[in-house]
Image (tube, rainbow, N blue to C red; front, side, top):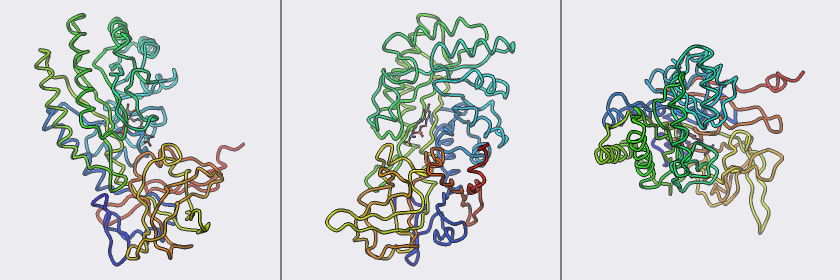
Length: 431
Ligand code: LLP
């Protein structure tokens, strides 16, 4: 199986040791499941790797855009993780979970004045400014409050991470950050250092997401460190922090490689140490912001099959009771997923089909070329694996479909972390 939390017993699919068909019966479908123990395991892997390779001050930050709801911030708090937030909505959710925002890093390429006020009001520890205009806006608000705001600058190191175009962010022409290559990174650094109410504490980059490339993070680290050395030499500024962003890839299908995080972090650390030595600079405090690699394979979505349509000589469709509203990733990126017949795992899979959603949209596809048992039909349960990242967080109410609940699985028990939306919820803001 693509992850060790997926098993089969008596022809039934189990997730985190629990019978998925019973969970579907108990909570209804579509249903998001989250394996809490797996999330905690991943946090600990990152924490341990950071402590071992970067020292005790290095902190992994959970990129909460991957999946944001109250319970997940509680878990991050309990696991001693920092967080990356990108909006007032994520800040609000973290606050409601009692997360200490001094360990929060506020990203985004366009923070509104209202966002900046809200974040400062609530004690967000670090701002990550995308551009000079943002630095100005942060300076103005900090001055108004009579505080000095800690801030990092997001730079683009000019590295192509070889992932989907839509999630590659570290290239020079990216909408994110200030490019080192064009000299804008240096300009914004000089500008920021001159601001009296902003304390520049470091630099940030994020090259992309679902990255498997051998040395992408290492190359990004070298470019960033060389830039930092130049800032020290030219302006006497030694930045204490370097944040290398998120992006490690996960296995959606069996042909995807498996990345061992401890090894990967160790390799980046070795390159950082070597580069710092070469550049005669102290090793900065290192951060990374994994999102997907913490939560993706802790997630699974269960659906009930409705119509099975066979178009002889053409195509077969298995329609499920969710779709692009709870998982838009195939529609957006053509992403791979593993789809399994949860209640028929012991049957031969010899029926090729497209698993499609129920939205009024031809592109509402979960996955193409899926092998299912030929007996698949109304009432069967289909499980889609590895849906813990960027599914719930990108879900919508298109066609007035209600978003599924999130049920957490831990130590053989299950509980609701997010309730299923009701029809009333759908009309809540309609006047
Ligand atoms: N840090 C920054 C600044 C980011 O922009 C992102 C992701 C991360 C960290 C976390 O990256 P991760 O470890 O999750 O790869 N919706 C797309 C992914 C968009 C990623 C956006 N930024 C998807 O479904 O694949």
